[in-house]
Image 1 (cartoon, rainbow, N blue to C red):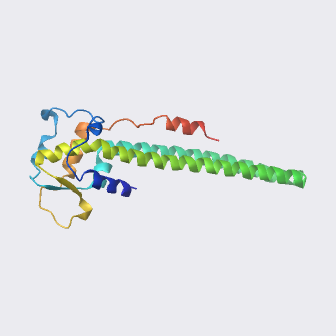
Image 2 (image 1 turned 45 degrees about the vertical axis):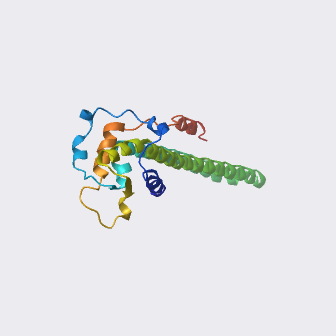
Image 3 (image 1 turned 90 degrees about the vertical axis):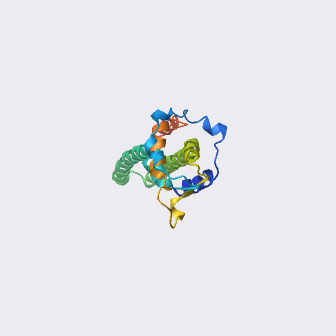
Length: 210
């Protein structure tokens, strides 16, 4: 699920310095007294830091909030699909029971109408599923943009020039793995993160339910 995000993060964190436009997307850094100071003190002064990007997204409050909204949307769609499936099955049984009482031409027309209806519903529900996936991908991209200034500050504090993905590291000295520190910093600065950019999408999706 996070492969695309991993690649984006690798490119995003390659250089120090957040763009001003991205910095405006996150709250101002809290005073030093409110920062999780212990985590920074444990880090080594190193030019290269190591980060587990999956953990950063999956274990930070911001990432967890994104995944919780995604799971909620999936479960809502699954519930809707089961309701629609039950209704279609009942309609199909009723049509089958009426078959012996209807002229062949009439039954054929009703059966074709039912098939057309079922196919339209299938396409609509597939579109909703695709929309949920697209929203998650958009939220992952927004996560990358929003957390960059926070990680930039962490890098500057320890004098680092680059953060690399833990998956490409064969060996590293103690103190250069910053995932726990980064998660603690994100939680302190961003909390659950900014609200979704398009909160009306769920309502629009519900309104289009067949």
